Image (cartoon, rainbow, N blue to C red; front, side, top):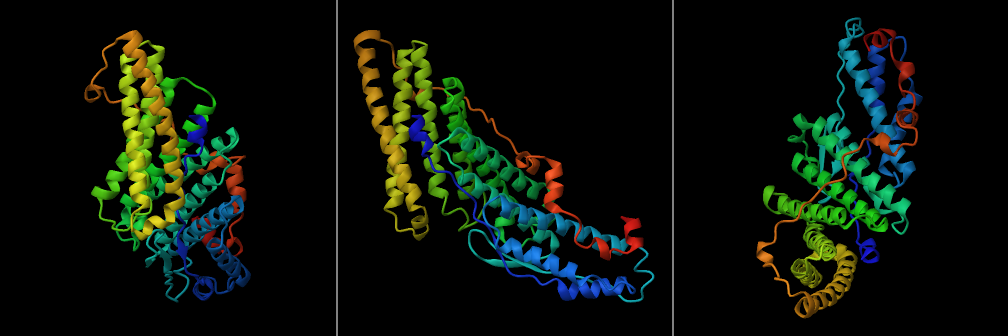
Length: 400
């Protein structure tokens, strides 16, 4: 079962696209106004422009991750600087009115629809892309070895942490954000998806480590429950017609698959406890869920829904997994029924009366420093010194 489960596909969040932004004219005018004797460093503005441009081309690797995080850190520095100028007596010394306003255009990660927003929208979108990029890094890990599984598990938890950060820090602005992918409901779904993906990696790890069946069935039971809830959330709780359409069938298929896994391990536990009637019941439930998965997968593959063509390889992979599992469980069930009839003669509990399986989550939202070798020191190194540090007026520094 470990070998079959290791091939279960993982999901990555698509990254948002954004248009080019030219800070030069606006920032140069701004610096000239507040620093009459220090007109602002054109090289620094160019450097900041370059940072913004670089995030549009960031690769899905550590270098790309650091580029995006560096820009986010420098953007926060710039925002702090602009706020400091407004609160300082620099403005009082200058008769020129100081107004600065940037509009940042980003495109919905799922529908491609564009929308413009202020600096808080820019920050939220950059964090979204950090979370998405790190989820892509997780998918790119070598899941054939234990270290790859552990790294992917940690990456997903950090990705989840970034999505949670968006909901925690941009609540007041989210309703006014122009694209739906950055709204609270969407971000909540993505957070849950990343945590579920981390738990999937954990299951792969623990199956490799041959830990107790008790933990394995609880991990799988949580996954089945979570994917079902995510599916319900995107179909019932909010009206995002096209969001997550690519994934919707996969969520319910994963829910069925992990229900199969949880009942499979519960059957093994019952066998160890010599509860042979329960062995049969749990194997019946396991078989039911994996057959449901196969049926739904075939239906999705034969659907005319255009969006499903992008998931064809994943669906075919899921069908292969489902067929392998159904063959295994069918053989096990037949043997269990035969053994109970000929040897144990135990009452087989009605599957309708079987209690809902326990479930447990072993993953959590993690901060960025969890994947930085030297923690906060590495984060500061990634961000680097303030790009505009030489342009800051002494009065502004005092206020900061």
